[in-house]
Length: 422
Image (tube, rainbow, N blue to C red; front, side, top):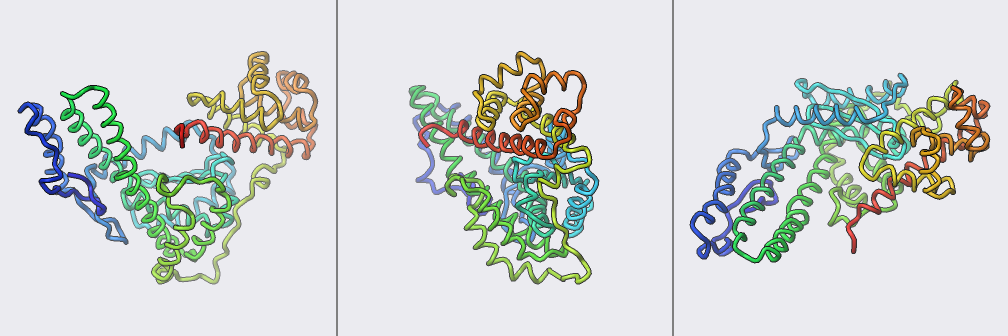
C-alpha cells in the first residue's frame, strides 16, 4: 500500500505484499494495523487542488494546518530582522494584497512582511496567508510584476494546502516505516537497520520528493493565474525564472531537488501562459513600480548607520543556530582576508557580539581605522557612521563586504550540509 502519483492510496497486488506467514501472530497484527487504519482514513481524505484539479491526500484538517502556519510564522519573524522602511513595506504589501484579493480567501488572516537578509533570494507563504519576502529577492524580481510572480507562487502553495499534503505524506511514511520495523524485528539488527535506511532513502527519492516537485510546479501554475487576476502580466513569470536561473549558478540535480530546475519551469510556464493570459486584463493607468536595489535599501540620510545595524543584527540572529557561528566566522574571514581564528579571537578579546565584530572588521578593512580603533570608538558610544567619518565610500565598501560574507556563509552551509560522497 503506497501513495500513488495522484496523491491517494491504492492497495497493491497480493504478490507485492510482504510475506508475513513466518512472523508471530501479534507481530503480524502490529505490523499491519497502522497501515490498515490509515487506509481507512485515506479513503475519505482525497481532495482536489484548486485550478489544476490534481488529486491530493490530506489527512490534516485546515484549522490544524492554519494554526501550525501561524505558530511557525511567529517563530520565523521572532528570529528575523524585519524591514521597517515604509516605502518598501508599502510596495510589497500593495502587490501582496492584490494577489490576496485574487486568491479570494477572506477567512485567512493575511500578513505580508519583509525580512532584511540580502543573502536570501527567496520568499515563503505559510498556511493561513502568512507571507514573507527576503530583501535578497528584490534584485532578481526587479519590479512589481516579478514580485507578483513570486508571491503568487507562494500563495499558490497556501491555496493548494501543500503544507497539509506534505504532513499527510509524512504520516504515511512514518506509519509504513513503523510497520516495516516491526516486521523486521526478528532479523539481525544490523541488517534490519540497513533495510530501514534503504526504506528511508526510498521514501525520500521515490515518494516524497516527486510530490514536492509536483507541488512546486502546481504553485507556479496557480501563481500565474493569481498574478494575472491581480492585474500583472503573467509573462513576467517567465522572465523572472530566466533571471533566477542566472542568479543560481549552483543548483542540485533535479532528481534530488524539491524544486524543478529553472529550465523545466520555463517550459511549463510557456505551456501555461495562454491559460493565465485569459485571466489578465491590463490596466493602462497602472504603473509597475521598480523594486529598490540593495544599494538603494542601504542608502539613507544617516550615511549607512541603519544598514550597519541591520547587518549586525542579522549576523547575530544567524549565529544562534547550531554550528552557524563557526561558519559565519569562516565566511567573514574569507571575505575580509583574515583567518577565521582571528575573527573568533576578536570576539573573545572585545566582548562584543559577532555581528558587531563583523561590522567593526568591515569598517576597518574599508579604511575607517584599525580594528582596535574602530572598536574603541564604538565602545565609547560613537555611531558606526561617525566612526567612518560619514564617508559614504567607506560605508558602501563595508556593507558590500558584509553582504558578501553572508552569501559566502550560505555557500559554506550548503557545502557542509551536503552528504559525503555526493
